[in-house]
Structure formats: structure tokens, C-alpha cells
Image (tube, rainbow, N blue to C red; front, side):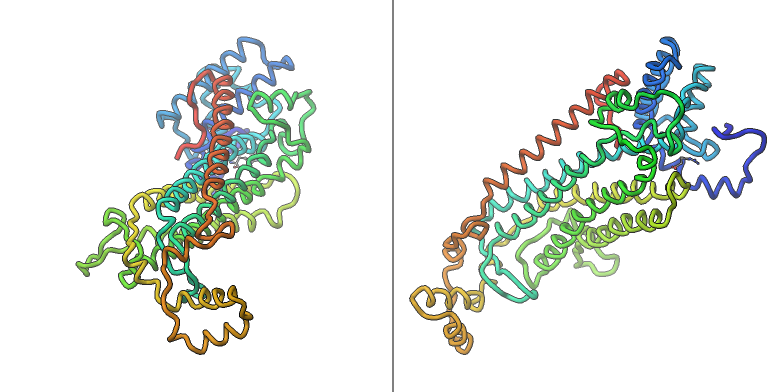
Length: 457
Ligand code: ARG
């Protein structure tokens, strides 16, 4: 197979190895998105008279075939091809001859890869927002179920104030909701078409960029053709930053669970199906999944950082360095996807040990409550604080359940506000579903196939 840019010499094989790297493997993720974008581009060329009806028909047919082949995991891309863009054009030329050589009119691989990535990221972002909102919803159900189970609240890891399993679980639910919401905002940023920007400077053909953007279901064109290329890597980093916030939340949840499932705490337990064993110590039941959640969160953060380091000093316009942003994007987003799913599984299997939690509510937990009771009877805070602090032995435990349920301020154990949380989460989920369904309509209008997905984890 010759390269798209091949003329009268062959590339040095070591240089080929170095420049192609694993891009041809990663590009399997982009095949479907690129075919959809290529159909939009072909329709744009037809609009301005560069392709006739038959030629457009042949290209649509061929690109639809490639989508089907990729769905069956049967569209090979070789190192010699360099990338999916080359493999797709080569397939079209082989199957349909002359017209395959026309599809690249007015575009560069630079806007081609940007457009495929944009379609892919747009879909991934909404899918992750939906999945994350689903985990949030699952945590809210868990919180509701255990809203009346007391749990020691800790600061500096030490016993602090009365809390509940409901407060603990819904804190993560609300955090994840905000992160899913942030992804929705990012999806708006990603919802602009770079197609038609070509190598970075547009082309002297009257391409109708608005038309092709609409064909692909973008609400707008990414206006400035140079910016359209310069945003490569930047949008990927924004997405991975969004992923990292989720990973940060789940890393904290993992850390809490590791602590609270220790036999010394015993607040919660994980089923053995979610734990691994030791090759030497027969008694071990290790929370490897939680530990790896902690380290994956760092991998996801470093994926964002890797991309920012690559783009930091690049001059304007396409630079081949951009290619190296693809691996952190694909791997970091996949790790996030798995991370959210694994927590769904853990939550389903988590047992709450109410007796251990009640036993952990020792008298010291109530010291501040005792002070504030006396304050309500008319004493001043500071003197009472000192008095109780100097006579801690005299503090006896209060009724643990009554104590948490008596708290009335919004967002506290007695007034968790779960109904409102649940409403917001379900609105966010249906918002994602609506937009994702609209993408299916767009894809079907482009290639005639139902249920096409561009993200293939
Ligand atoms: N695989 C390349 C990438 O991901 C495609 C673009 C190549 N463009 C070029 N001018 N060499 O960036």
C-alpha cells in the first residue's frame, strides 16, 4: 500500500516505524467517526459540483461498507497505511476506482482527523456524563436506603461529629453529579465542526462548512480555520481534565472504602467476588480493585498532563506532535469508562454493617452536640466548650439515630435533600439520552445504518 503522500521515493523503514508508531492501531477507534465525516464531506463536494450523483452514491456505499466491516472488527489498518484515513481512501479507490481519488478534494488529513476526533469525543463525553450520572443515581439510592444508619464523621481522620451512611454516600453522589454536569458543558464546547479547515488555512474552493456541519449534527462551525487546527490536543486535555475530576472523586471513595472495610473498622464489607487473594497468605481478601482505582486516577490525570506538555510549545498550525496526543486520549478515556463501571459493581456488592457502625459511635463523637445543647439552654459557647473539653469523661453517648435525624439544616443528616438530588440527576440523564438519540438519527441519515456507535470500548 502506498501512502497518501507517496510520490517518487519510499520512506526509510526506521523513520516509518518512528512516525507511524502505534497510530495505526489506535486509529481503529476513529474508523467509524471518519467514515461518517467523510460522507458529510462527500455530500459537501457534491453540493459544489465536484462530485456527480453517481460518484456521491459510490462513496456513500463504500463508506457504509467500511462502517459495517469495522463493526465486525474486520477493517484492517496496517503500519504501511499509516492511519485510518489512508486505509479508508485506499479501500474506496480499490473498490470504486477513480472516485476514491476524489474524496480528499479540499481536505487535509489534519481537518479529517480533527473532525473524526470531534465526533468521537462529542459522543464519548455524553456517554460518560450519562454513566457518571447513573453512578450518582446509584449512590443516592444507597444513601436513601441507609439514611438512618449512623456513622462517625471524621476530620483529620479522627472521630469528629455524628454523621450517617446516607450523608457519606450522597456526598459522592452530588460530587459526581457536578462532574457529569461539567462534561455536559464540555460537550457544548466540542459541538463545533472543524471540517473545511483543511491543512490549517482553508482551501480556495467554495466549501459550505455550515452544510457539512449540519450533516454531522454539529450545532455550529468552528469558525477560524487556524483555530480549528490549533484546538487539537486542547479539547482532548479538557476532556481528560473532566475525566480526572471524576477519577479524583472515585479515588477518595476508594480510599474511604479501603479504610472502612478494614477488619479494624468493619463498617462495610465487599463480597469476595470483588476481592483478590494472595499467592502465599491463605487468609487474604484484598481490595485490589480499590487500590487500582487510586492509581488509575493518577494515570488519567497524567494523560491530561501528557497532552498539555505536548501542545504547550507548539507553533500555530498542524504539527505532527499532535499525533502523540491520541494515545493518552484513547487510554485515559477508556480507563475512566472502566473506573465508573467498576464502582457501580462495588456499590451493588457493598454490605453495610450497622452494628459495627453503631459501636463506632463512641461518646467523644457527641462532645460538640453536648456543648450546643447547653448553648441552646442559654450558656455562651466558649465557656461551655472549655468546660466540656476539660471534663470529657463526663460526656455520655447520645442516641445515635435520634442525633442524626434531629439535624434540620439543609444538607445535613436529618435533611439530606435526596429528592432534589434525584430529580437533578434524572434530568441530566435524560438530557444525555436525548442528545445521544439525536446523534443516532444523524448517523442513520448519513450512512443508512441504525444504532451506529463511534466509541467502541
Ligand atoms: N495520523 C496523523 C495524526 O494523527 C494524521 C495527520 C497527518 N498529517 C500530516 N500532515 N502528516 O495527526
